[in-house]
Amino acid sequence: MTESAKVARVPHPAPGGALRSVRCSTGFGRPRVAAVAALALLLVGCGRFGPAGSAGAVAAHPPAAAVEPANPAAPYPTIMAPSTFQAMSPGALTSLEASLEPELAADQVQLPSGTPSPMLPPPGGWLPRRRIVAYYGNPLSPAMGVLGWYPAAQDMARLLAQAAAYTRVDPAQPALPAIDLVADVAQASPGPHGAYRRRMPYSLLNQELTLARQYHALLILEIQVGRSTVAQELPYFLPYLAQPDVELALDPEFDMPPGEIPGKWIGTMSAAEINWAIAQMSDLVSRLHLPPKIVIVHQFTPGMVPDWRGIRVQPGVQFVMDTDGFGGQALKKNNYRRYIADQPIPPVRYGGIKLFYKYDTGLMTPTEVVALQPPPSLVIYQ
Image (cartoon, rainbow, N blue to C red; front, side, top):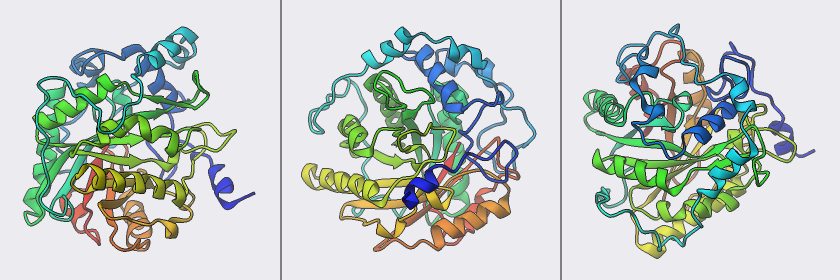
């Protein structure tokens, strides 16, 4: 068995473990991606002001612009009982798949009329001049992350306030807000194509890109490939990645070999897969004369990116390794040192960290985050 195959079989730690992914499980002990799949199927086509964005479901949440630690004991909202997912019919699964538009060439995308103009970076790209502060999730499911906890305008107001907190702490590196959308959602069931993933329709990508531009923010597309591959999934998103203000994130946690189920085992992504995505982004930049593209890879166990030394950053790409997972401050700082400071990827690699409003024990403040070495260029709130 290869080393990659071995690490892919590491299960998610049980609830209460010191550090694990917030996306592992619901309060019912089922993989969270299963609940996400059900909610996405029920709410596809609903806007941010539909059921997923209703304020009543999230009234217990504290303001998102947390400068002081959030209350770790506050209850996390339940989106549905496991039986709801089990009752989903094959027809409902097929209906979402049918809503997907055909793949387009990167230079053929037609954005809806009235879509705001993109925000362009300074020469050389956003990094390291700006620090990106992002909200993570999918508005179809508030359980995936902070996106969708509130109606869109409130979500964005809180994101802007959170970004402003970093600018106050470090005005030399002003914060740039970003929407970190899970655009390819790993699933606990195979779906029509046996890929254990759900691509979000272009209508949702249009919605989030328009929202990001209205608030002068970036859009990051998160790709969870399930049992598919980066090479199979990325082409669907190229029309949006070809936009100058849309960036890419890859999540090895949900890159599963045959026989493994997302949310049950921790996945693994090879340097070859990452390098393929980097090459595609580099080609987009060169061919379409785009500003540099940001490529983000998440990691919270050694096995998620076992051969990280083989990652090769190409011209036109700004690479960020983001330390994921939640836990206490000491453990998060140790993981940041392990996966950022101690994993140099030439010629330049930027550091990122993910923070969890509801699951981190003693949520790190902007001052504490900026004090990390090297200071993170990306901060994601989930």
